[in-house]
Amino acid sequence: MMPSLQAQRPFAQSPSIAVSFELTWLRLALHPVRVLQLNPTFYPSTRDGGPSESLLLLARGLLAANVELEIVTTNGDGPTNSHVPLGASTFYKGVPVRYFNRFPKLGYAPSQSLLRHLKRVARDVDLVHVHALFNFPSTAGAALLRSMGVPYVTSPRGMCEPWALGHRSWKKWPYWRAIERGNVAGARAVHATSDEEASQLRLLFPTQDVFVVPNPVELPSEPLDVARAANRIVFLGRLHPVKGLEVLVAAMSLLTKRHPDVELVLAGPDHHGELARVEARLASLAPRPNVRWIGEVHGDAKSRFLASATALALTSHSESFGRTVVEALAHGTPVVVSRACPWASVAQHGAGFWVDNEPEAVADALARILEAPSGGHTMRLAARTLANDYDVDRIGRAMLDEYRRVLAAP
Image (cartoon, rainbow, N blue to C red; front, side, top):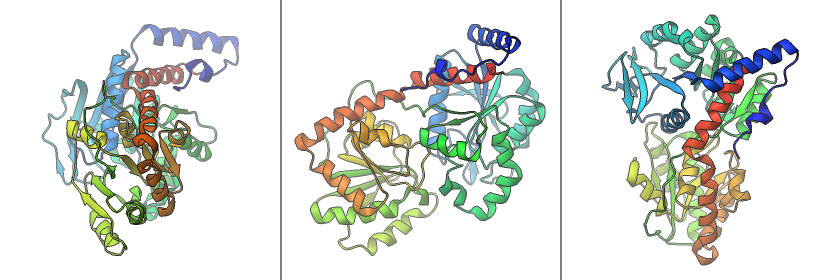
């Protein structure tokens, strides 16, 4: 269920504050809210995976809710830069975007031209929504907004989770203490995509306004007419250490003892050499499970990939959301998700299993799906029902409600 606006509206503390609150609320209700969405990279780059897709769909939902917005980003695309118009307003799939040159070509996405543009236009909008941490546009942008007194909301996107802060902590912690922690504390509010992420953020920032709005997912209008491949488990996402693929392939080895014909199909980009580590792990397993990698899948191919699977497995060590879970559910595909991911609702709704991130627990959950009565028909119905909570327009309206609440708060 989406967060209730009325339930989260702060109490005024004096008559004058109450009048100011109501007048601000009325203005925001009668006029479109103007928002800049600030992100280090965006489509056509697909190197960052989920964040670009989530931002695209969030922007669509906000536009449908009559929000005036523009995405401000760089042309960064891994080791190269995308060939996109620079400095001018353009559109990507109907969403207004303005790209700025990344120089030098580093993963940190430095862009002085983006920062100069933000300084020129920040006071012309009601709010800036800053996405992610530990990159130049978000970090320098938030610091600039703080100095200008411009209200902003920040979305850490899982980067405040213990695993994320601990990964390469030798360079993150000094940076966190010197700059990034102040940027998050200085935000008007902090956006979490799950209750679990919100709890972690409140531990780090006990006095901060933290609100929850899940990521949106584009739902199919009707189930695809695709035959389910018996005994096929799938993984969808970037191949990266955080995804816990060593747990998943070990679980597949255990599962193979019960179901010799089971296979695991991995889909997603390998930008970090993780596939080689997975293959090394496979070589040490007995029995060796049937695992293959098919590279990236997009659009209709991705939908068919998910709709044809018996189950999707996500054994991440840390996730603030896990968009592929909803994408699988939307196609009626049950899921097995580790408890490091915020998906207790999967088990609560009977759409799959939420388990300890250990090979034995994962293997047992996958076996229960493979052996479910009537081919798992009940689970598939529950999966589609749960996915409806993440509709694009619904999430867009929920985020707009939060923008209005944050801007009107005394």
